[in-house]
Length: 89
Image (tube, rainbow, N blue to C red; front, side):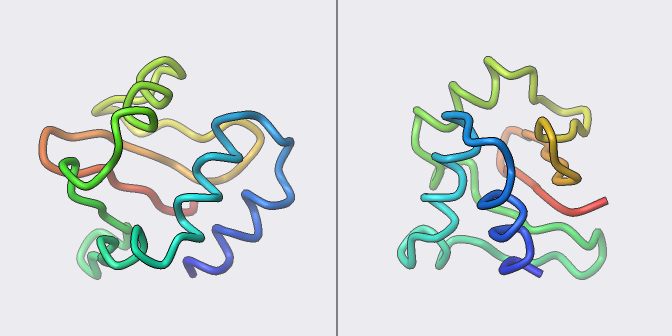
């Protein structure tokens, strides 16, 4: 499913946020921090492992503790104090 999320990001309009998320998710070292929560059907990344640029960009685009779709995609994101979750809907 992570590969499908990358495909969606690759085909989405090329905004700075889409591009940086695609680059990070494509980075082997960054991907090592991603886990899949089978109970919630969401991918999770420890908040401490996400760089400040992505955190800032997500907050600037209105992401927070309420699920929100990434513009022009069916990828949803939530930000919690200890994790950032993302999934397909």
